[in-house]
Picture (cartoon, rainbow, N blue to C red):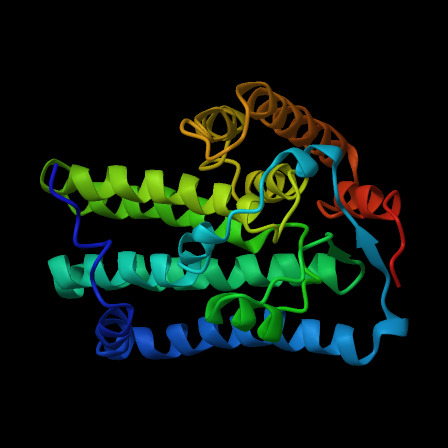
Length: 286
Protein backbone atom coordinates (compact mmCIF):
# COMPACT_ATOMS: atom_id res chain seq x y z
CA UNK A 1 0.00 0.00 0.00
CA UNK A 2 1.31 3.43 -0.92
CA UNK A 3 2.30 5.53 2.09
CA UNK A 4 0.18 8.55 2.94
CA UNK A 5 1.81 11.90 2.30
CA UNK A 6 1.10 12.76 5.95
CA UNK A 7 4.28 10.80 6.61
CA UNK A 8 6.40 12.82 4.20
CA UNK A 9 4.75 16.22 4.01
CA UNK A 10 6.91 19.05 5.38
CA UNK A 11 5.94 20.20 8.86
CA UNK A 12 7.17 23.71 8.01
CA UNK A 13 4.94 23.77 4.95
CA UNK A 14 2.02 22.67 7.10
CA UNK A 15 2.74 25.49 9.55
CA UNK A 16 2.71 28.00 6.71
CA UNK A 17 -0.60 26.54 5.57
CA UNK A 18 -2.13 27.02 9.02
CA UNK A 19 -0.87 30.59 9.35
CA UNK A 20 -2.02 31.46 5.84
CA UNK A 21 -5.62 31.56 7.09
CA UNK A 22 -6.31 34.82 8.98
CA UNK A 23 -9.01 33.13 11.00
CA UNK A 24 -6.45 30.73 12.47
CA UNK A 25 -3.55 33.05 13.26
CA UNK A 26 -4.67 34.14 16.72
CA UNK A 27 -5.67 30.62 17.73
CA UNK A 28 -2.41 29.17 16.43
CA UNK A 29 -0.33 31.76 18.30
CA UNK A 30 -2.27 31.02 21.49
CA UNK A 31 -1.66 27.31 20.98
CA UNK A 32 2.09 27.67 20.54
CA UNK A 33 2.11 30.09 23.47
CA UNK A 34 0.52 27.39 25.61
CA UNK A 35 3.19 24.92 24.50
CA UNK A 36 5.94 27.38 25.40
CA UNK A 37 4.53 28.49 28.75
CA UNK A 38 2.97 25.26 29.98
CA UNK A 39 5.86 22.99 29.03
CA UNK A 40 9.17 24.71 28.43
CA UNK A 41 8.87 27.70 30.79
CA UNK A 42 7.15 25.73 33.52
CA UNK A 43 9.90 23.13 33.57
CA UNK A 44 12.56 25.85 33.49
CA UNK A 45 11.03 27.25 36.68
CA UNK A 46 11.20 23.75 38.12
CA UNK A 47 14.91 23.60 37.39
CA UNK A 48 15.72 27.13 38.61
CA UNK A 49 13.59 26.90 41.76
CA UNK A 50 13.84 23.19 42.42
CA UNK A 51 13.40 23.46 46.17
CA UNK A 52 10.02 25.14 45.78
CA UNK A 53 8.51 22.17 43.94
CA UNK A 54 7.72 18.62 44.84
CA UNK A 55 9.15 16.12 42.34
CA UNK A 56 7.94 12.53 42.45
CA UNK A 57 9.38 9.46 40.81
CA UNK A 58 6.83 7.51 38.77
CA UNK A 59 8.95 4.54 37.69
CA UNK A 60 7.46 1.03 37.61
CA UNK A 61 9.31 -2.33 37.74
CA UNK A 62 8.00 -3.13 34.24
CA UNK A 63 10.08 -0.26 32.86
CA UNK A 64 13.15 -2.39 33.47
CA UNK A 65 11.81 -5.05 31.12
CA UNK A 66 11.60 -2.62 28.21
CA UNK A 67 14.87 -2.21 26.27
CA UNK A 68 16.33 1.23 25.62
CA UNK A 69 16.04 1.63 21.85
CA UNK A 70 17.67 4.77 20.49
CA UNK A 71 16.29 4.02 17.01
CA UNK A 72 12.82 5.08 18.24
CA UNK A 73 13.86 8.69 18.83
CA UNK A 74 12.63 9.86 15.40
CA UNK A 75 9.14 8.58 16.13
CA UNK A 76 9.25 10.02 19.65
CA UNK A 77 10.15 13.48 18.40
CA UNK A 78 7.43 13.45 15.76
CA UNK A 79 4.56 14.02 18.17
CA UNK A 80 4.24 17.79 17.59
CA UNK A 81 5.01 17.65 13.85
CA UNK A 82 2.42 14.85 13.68
CA UNK A 83 -0.50 17.03 14.75
CA UNK A 84 0.74 19.99 12.71
CA UNK A 85 0.84 17.85 9.56
CA UNK A 86 -2.67 16.49 10.10
CA UNK A 87 -4.12 20.00 10.29
CA UNK A 88 -2.09 21.19 7.33
CA UNK A 89 -3.42 18.20 5.40
CA UNK A 90 -7.05 19.01 6.23
CA UNK A 91 -6.59 22.64 5.21
CA UNK A 92 -4.84 21.72 2.00
CA UNK A 93 -7.61 19.32 0.99
CA UNK A 94 -10.64 21.36 2.09
CA UNK A 95 -9.53 24.98 2.34
CA UNK A 96 -11.85 27.41 4.13
CA UNK A 97 -14.36 24.68 4.91
CA UNK A 98 -11.80 23.14 7.26
CA UNK A 99 -11.00 26.34 9.17
CA UNK A 100 -13.64 25.92 11.94
CA UNK A 101 -12.44 22.36 12.59
CA UNK A 102 -8.78 23.36 12.74
CA UNK A 103 -9.59 26.32 14.98
CA UNK A 104 -11.31 23.97 17.42
CA UNK A 105 -8.41 21.53 17.19
CA UNK A 106 -5.87 24.21 18.10
CA UNK A 107 -7.99 25.34 21.05
CA UNK A 108 -8.16 21.79 22.38
CA UNK A 109 -4.40 21.25 22.04
CA UNK A 110 -3.95 24.39 24.16
CA UNK A 111 -6.34 22.93 26.72
CA UNK A 112 -4.30 19.73 26.92
CA UNK A 113 -1.14 21.66 27.73
CA UNK A 114 -2.98 23.66 30.39
CA UNK A 115 -4.28 20.44 31.94
CA UNK A 116 -0.83 18.90 32.10
CA UNK A 117 0.53 22.11 33.61
CA UNK A 118 -2.23 22.11 36.25
CA UNK A 119 -0.78 18.86 37.57
CA UNK A 120 2.88 19.82 37.18
CA UNK A 121 2.53 23.14 39.01
CA UNK A 122 1.49 21.21 42.11
CA UNK A 123 3.67 18.15 41.68
CA UNK A 124 6.33 17.56 39.05
CA UNK A 125 7.08 13.98 38.06
CA UNK A 126 10.11 12.25 36.61
CA UNK A 127 11.58 8.86 35.75
CA UNK A 128 15.04 7.33 35.67
CA UNK A 129 16.08 8.06 32.07
CA UNK A 130 19.49 7.07 30.68
CA UNK A 131 22.16 9.76 30.39
CA UNK A 132 22.59 9.07 26.70
CA UNK A 133 23.87 11.85 24.44
CA UNK A 134 25.02 9.74 21.49
CA UNK A 135 22.96 11.49 18.81
CA UNK A 136 21.99 15.07 18.07
CA UNK A 137 18.32 14.39 18.80
CA UNK A 138 19.06 12.97 22.23
CA UNK A 139 21.23 16.01 22.94
CA UNK A 140 18.22 18.18 22.06
CA UNK A 141 15.96 16.16 24.36
CA UNK A 142 18.31 16.54 27.32
CA UNK A 143 18.91 20.21 26.56
CA UNK A 144 15.29 21.33 26.24
CA UNK A 145 13.37 18.80 28.34
CA UNK A 146 14.36 18.77 32.04
CA UNK A 147 12.16 15.68 32.36
CA UNK A 148 9.83 16.99 35.04
CA UNK A 149 6.42 16.53 33.35
CA UNK A 150 5.91 12.79 33.02
CA UNK A 151 2.39 12.53 34.46
CA UNK A 152 0.17 12.97 32.60
CA UNK A 153 2.13 12.33 29.41
CA UNK A 154 1.58 15.10 26.89
CA UNK A 155 2.94 12.82 24.20
CA UNK A 156 0.11 10.36 24.76
CA UNK A 157 -2.57 13.00 25.24
CA UNK A 158 -1.68 14.91 22.10
CA UNK A 159 -1.35 11.93 19.76
CA UNK A 160 -4.52 10.23 20.99
CA UNK A 161 -6.45 13.45 20.51
CA UNK A 162 -4.88 13.98 17.09
CA UNK A 163 -5.92 10.68 15.60
CA UNK A 164 -9.45 10.82 17.03
CA UNK A 165 -10.01 14.43 15.93
CA UNK A 166 -8.45 13.92 12.50
CA UNK A 167 -10.87 11.06 11.85
CA UNK A 168 -13.77 13.27 12.93
CA UNK A 169 -12.60 16.12 10.69
CA UNK A 170 -12.28 13.92 7.62
CA UNK A 171 -15.66 12.32 8.31
CA UNK A 172 -17.41 15.67 8.83
CA UNK A 173 -15.94 16.97 5.58
CA UNK A 174 -17.21 13.90 3.72
CA UNK A 175 -13.73 12.67 2.90
CA UNK A 176 -13.58 9.31 4.67
CA UNK A 177 -13.96 7.33 1.46
CA UNK A 178 -11.06 9.20 -0.15
CA UNK A 179 -8.77 9.44 2.85
CA UNK A 180 -9.34 6.25 4.83
CA UNK A 181 -5.65 5.45 4.30
CA UNK A 182 -4.64 8.67 6.03
CA UNK A 183 -7.08 8.05 8.90
CA UNK A 184 -5.68 4.55 9.42
CA UNK A 185 -2.14 5.87 9.35
CA UNK A 186 -2.80 8.50 12.03
CA UNK A 187 -4.11 5.80 14.36
CA UNK A 188 -1.07 3.58 13.77
CA UNK A 189 1.29 6.50 14.21
CA UNK A 190 -0.39 7.53 17.46
CA UNK A 191 0.16 4.01 18.76
CA UNK A 192 3.80 4.05 17.60
CA UNK A 193 4.52 7.39 19.29
CA UNK A 194 2.94 6.09 22.50
CA UNK A 195 5.19 3.04 22.35
CA UNK A 196 8.22 5.21 21.62
CA UNK A 197 7.99 7.05 24.95
CA UNK A 198 8.84 3.76 26.66
CA UNK A 199 11.57 2.68 24.23
CA UNK A 200 13.48 5.97 24.60
CA UNK A 201 12.88 5.97 28.37
CA UNK A 202 11.18 9.35 28.51
CA UNK A 203 8.22 7.91 30.41
CA UNK A 204 7.14 5.01 32.58
CA UNK A 205 4.35 2.56 31.85
CA UNK A 206 2.49 4.47 34.60
CA UNK A 207 2.41 7.60 32.44
CA UNK A 208 0.22 6.06 29.75
CA UNK A 209 -2.86 5.27 31.89
CA UNK A 210 -2.49 8.62 33.67
CA UNK A 211 -2.65 10.38 30.29
CA UNK A 212 -5.57 8.28 29.08
CA UNK A 213 -7.47 8.97 32.29
CA UNK A 214 -6.89 12.69 31.73
CA UNK A 215 -8.29 12.35 28.22
CA UNK A 216 -11.47 10.71 29.52
CA UNK A 217 -11.94 13.55 31.97
CA UNK A 218 -11.08 16.00 29.19
CA UNK A 219 -13.78 14.68 26.86
CA UNK A 220 -15.68 11.56 27.94
CA UNK A 221 -17.77 11.50 24.76
CA UNK A 222 -14.69 11.00 22.59
CA UNK A 223 -12.47 9.12 25.02
CA UNK A 224 -14.82 6.71 26.73
CA UNK A 225 -13.47 3.72 28.70
CA UNK A 226 -14.34 1.55 25.69
CA UNK A 227 -12.22 3.70 23.34
CA UNK A 228 -9.37 3.71 25.86
CA UNK A 229 -9.53 -0.07 26.30
CA UNK A 230 -9.23 -0.51 22.53
CA UNK A 231 -6.25 1.84 22.39
CA UNK A 232 -4.43 0.01 25.18
CA UNK A 233 -5.23 -3.34 23.59
CA UNK A 234 -3.73 -2.24 20.27
CA UNK A 235 -0.37 -1.25 21.75
CA UNK A 236 2.73 -3.32 20.94
CA UNK A 237 1.19 -5.44 18.21
CA UNK A 238 4.78 -5.76 17.03
CA UNK A 239 7.14 -5.27 19.94
CA UNK A 240 10.81 -4.37 19.52
CA UNK A 241 12.65 -6.59 21.96
CA UNK A 242 9.87 -6.83 24.55
CA UNK A 243 8.77 -10.36 25.43
CA UNK A 244 5.11 -11.35 24.86
CA UNK A 245 4.77 -11.88 28.61
CA UNK A 246 5.95 -8.35 29.34
CA UNK A 247 3.66 -6.89 26.67
CA UNK A 248 0.72 -8.61 28.33
CA UNK A 249 1.78 -7.30 31.74
CA UNK A 250 2.15 -3.73 30.40
CA UNK A 251 -1.33 -3.76 28.89
CA UNK A 252 -2.89 -5.31 31.98
CA UNK A 253 -1.22 -2.80 34.27
CA UNK A 254 -2.22 0.13 32.05
CA UNK A 255 -5.85 -1.01 31.91
CA UNK A 256 -6.08 -1.58 35.67
CA UNK A 257 -4.42 1.71 36.60
CA UNK A 258 -6.60 3.64 34.13
CA UNK A 259 -9.74 2.18 35.68
CA UNK A 260 -8.43 2.90 39.16
CA UNK A 261 -7.80 6.55 38.26
CA UNK A 262 -11.25 6.78 36.69
CA UNK A 263 -13.03 5.22 39.65
CA UNK A 264 -11.30 7.49 42.14
CA UNK A 265 -11.73 10.52 39.89
CA UNK A 266 -15.49 10.13 39.70
CA UNK A 267 -15.65 10.46 43.49
CA UNK A 268 -13.06 13.21 43.85
CA UNK A 269 -13.72 16.93 44.08
CA UNK A 270 -11.26 17.59 41.23
CA UNK A 271 -10.15 15.50 38.25
CA UNK A 272 -6.50 15.96 39.25
CA UNK A 273 -6.90 14.43 42.72
CA UNK A 274 -6.25 10.77 41.73
CA UNK A 275 -3.07 11.86 39.95
CA UNK A 276 -1.94 13.91 42.94
CA UNK A 277 -2.58 10.96 45.26
CA UNK A 278 -0.58 8.72 42.96
CA UNK A 279 2.30 11.20 42.79
CA UNK A 280 2.37 11.73 46.56
CA UNK A 281 2.77 7.99 46.99
CA UNK A 282 5.91 8.11 44.83
CA UNK A 283 9.44 8.68 45.96
CA UNK A 284 10.23 12.35 46.58
CA UNK A 285 13.16 13.42 44.46
CA UNK A 286 13.20 17.07 45.41
